[in-house]
Amino acid sequence: MKDPMRLLTSLTPLVLFLFLAVAPATSWSQDRSDTGRSRAQRPRPVEKVQAEKPLLAPAQSGWRFGFSTGLLGAGRAFQVETLNGVSVPWDLGNGAAFQASRYNATFDQNLSLGLEVHRDMGTYWSANAAVTYARVDLGAEALAGQQGLAVLLDRVDVVQLGIGGTVRLVAQPDHPFASLEAVYTSLGAGRLEGLDQSGLGWRVGLGYRHVLNDDWAARVQGRVSRLSFTAEDFQPEVAVLDPPGFDIDAQDHLTFFEIMLVVEFR
Image 1 (tube, rainbow, N blue to C red):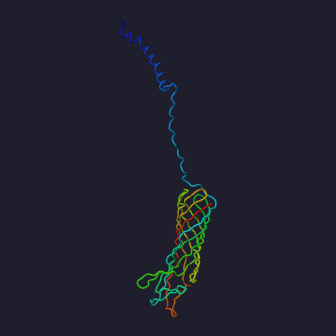
Image 2 (image 1 turned 45 degrees about the vertical axis):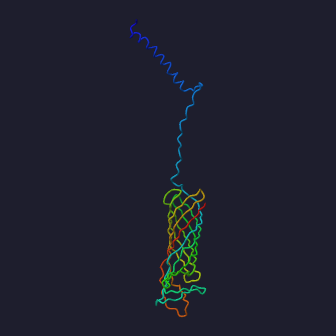
Image 3 (image 1 turned 30 degrees about the horizontal axis):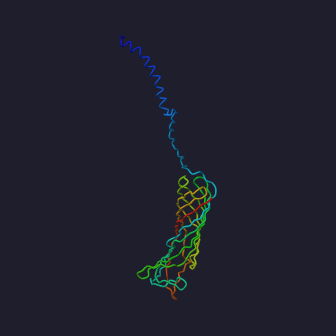
């Protein structure tokens, strides 16, 4: 019998040759189906890459136009009181009157309508002009006995023309903004002509603008404007032959508050 070590040594090259011949064949057979065809490789999943939305709004240039609707009011205007504290019938016109010794006159909120034009001047700034009209109720609040009383004194036409600028507070398509304008205000009373007046003042506003598409946008805005006011020419009408003296305590200015919705287009 041959030496076992010599036999193992002689068989080693043969084992190594068989291993090298069988290993590639095994790997090749794993890549083939039972029919002998190569198996299709599974495609690697493709990662979806979403395009990022632009954070900055492009610089704008051109004209924008808009129409607005909202509510406009001014609050307390003046107070009328008899000097002796006696209750008298205050004339409302058309034979109507209310009995009181004192009443407060206020401009109530009413519907406003307006037109606007804007000129874009870059990413942040724009110049604008706007005209607004509202017919505001001038009401009177009085104490009749133990009960409060509210009546309509007159209706006053309010026309405002503002010219100024607007700045967006962030450089994004949808953005909050602020505005500052010089405003001319005209008051035209119906029956109480002594309240007719006009003058210059200022107006500030804050709002939010939402872009609908390339041509249309919508804004929600609140504005406050201020106008010098006087009641020197106003004479209350009393429905008695010998009216008592009275005192008028008027505000030295009117502060108009407006909430509005604006639709813009190019």
